[in-house]
Each structure stands twice: as structure tokens, then as C-alpha cells.
Length: 451
Image (spheres, rainbow, N blue to C red):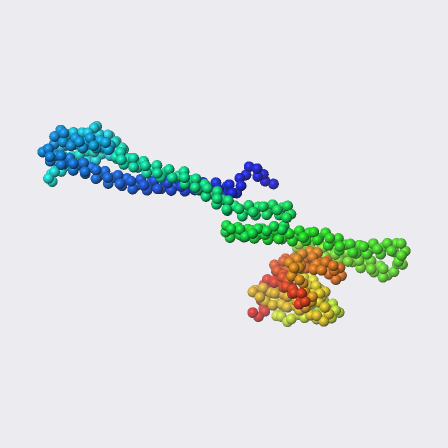
């Protein structure tokens, strides 16, 4: 058994997986969003820088025209205001000689040179450098910082929501599996009566629930058959052994005189026990994986006719008509001896439960590339509740029947195993008062029946 003390539940695993997935998605989305914001922000900064540079150049051009040329104080108010925005301005005349500088230019970052014109002539040059290496102004810098903080500050609340949703979804997904696990635990303790209601969550979970319900039903059925098995075997052995014991005691005590009739009775009971053991041996061999089949191409119609002729006297003796409908030959891969046992078992059952002047019919026909073999009688029929168990060992419809009338309940189990070993299937249909039909479908190697 596996230790579960240190193992996480499925719900916990699913929750952590969903939470981790949500975390990756949120972080990736935040990174992508931040990258897109950065791209558009840089475009905005470039455009804004160009507009700012041109605006400063226009103001200095107006100051040049007002002062009648470049003076030491021309445009110094522009320098003071620009420094507040993180700009360093270096004003040059048309000969590239320094007029004034707001501060020592930074050696890092972006440097722009703008031409100053007046009356269509170049009168000077404006060299602008930025304090921020990315050419942000102070306002740009604060705006960018606010955008970045806004993007990443959403990660925590979104992750909290994702965590809650993940645990909710994990519980909903794992609930049907938890219920199935509980059912499996009940099945392990022998409680076969529980069933899982149709779960939500998809086709796969529904199919799994149906499989578990089917397994529970099968185990319940097998448990019932197992409980009956001991009593059935005891009953099958008790009757002949009790008869033998009574006869032997009567002979030993002198109550009965030894006679051929007494010994014949004892012999018949011994044969009955031998027959039961032989049936069990056949069933064991049929259920074995090493069942020896001597398959060969055989005409099923001819083989069935020969088998019908073997049992015909028994039907004549009881006054039951045995009819085999004409059919054209069809070849199948069969073990001839096993097929005879199959057919004799089915015909023997039909004979037992068909009253005198009744009728049993054997039909062979083709359907969908398979040969269909049917044995039908007009006997007493079998109630629907017994049909699922007919092919179980020791199962008898009327449990009050003794072996001479009802058999040991092994014959149909052997028939079922032999049919399956030949790659076929067997089904039964029956109605009380109308009779019973056993239908066997076998694969063919060639078809000669008309379609």
C-alpha cells in the first residue's frame, strides 16, 4: 500500500498548478503591457522633445529680434525655466560662438542641436542636453514612473483573485473524483450498493463514473454468485452422498438385502458425482487461458446436422419436434468437438424445458459478415431477472430443481466460455410462456449464403 501521509490531495495540487499558471500569465501580461506602454511612451517623449526644442528655439528667435541681436542676457529667462524641466541649454551665434550656457552640459544622455532662424536666416544654434539619460523631462519621468507602478501594482490583487478562483475551480473539478474515490473505498470494504450520480466536468468524468458504477454492479453480482457457490456445490454433493450413505448403512445393518437394484442405485449416484466432477473439470479447462482449441475450416451446417442427428432420439422419445431449417453451407474456423458440446448443451436445455408436442428449431443464417446460429424453443421461458446470470457457474433459474431436472448450472457456463474462445458471442432472449432463443454469432472465413 502507498503511504498518503505526506502526499497532497488532488484538489491542492490542481489549486497550486492553477495558481502558478495564473501567476505566470499575470506576470507575462504585465511585462507585455509594460513593454507596449514603454514603446508608445518613447514615441510620445520623442515627439514631445522635438516640440519642446522647437518651442524654445522660437522663443529665443523672438528674443533675438527684440534685442536686435544676441546679448549676454538674451533669453536667459528661458534657460532658468528650462533647467527646472531637467534641460541644459547652450546658445551659440551663427558663427558657432558661445552666447551663454545655462549649466555645464551633461556628457550622457541625449543631445539635440536646433537651428534658430529669424526672417528666414539662420541667426544661431541651440544645443540642448537632458539630465535624464533617456531624455525625459522631469514631468516625463514622473509620468513614466506612475505608469510602471500602475501596471505592476495590479499584480498583487489580480494574483489574490486568481488564487481564490483557482481554489474554487480545483474544488469543483476534483469533487467528482473525490466522490469516486469514496465509492472505491466503499467497494474495497465490500459495500457494492452505492452508485455515483452523473457528475459534471466533462465527458471523461462521466465515462469514468459509468465505468465505476458498472464495476460496482459486476462486483455486486459476483459477490452474490460467490455466496451462492458454496451452498450450490454443497447441495450438488450432499444429495448423492446422502443417498450413498443411506444405502450403505441399510445394507451394512441388514435392513436391506443386497440386490442388483440396490447396487445399480449406488452406481448411479457414483456416476452422478463423477459427472459433476467432469463438468467442473470442463468448466475449469474452458476458463483456463491455455484452453486447447483444435480449430480447422469446417462446414458449420454439416457439423450441426450431424450433432442434431445424435440427439434426435431423445427428442423423439419425449415427443418434441426438433427442426433444423435448411441452409447453404458456410465455413468457419471451429474445434469440432467443442462445437458439438456447445450444440448438445443448448439442445439438451431446450428439450428439458419444452413440453411434449412442443417444438425446438435450429437456424443458421448470415448477418453482417458473421454467421448467426440460433436454437429456439417454445417452452416455459425464462423471466427477465434471471437472464443476466444464465451463463454464471452453478446458476439455476429454479433453485428448487434437483440435478435430474435442473442440472448443476454448469452447462451454459461451459457453452459461454467455448463460444468466447472461438471469438464469438452468445446472447439469450426469452419470455415467460413463449419460449427461449439462444443466439451465437461467429466470424466466418468465407460466405456462401445468399445476402
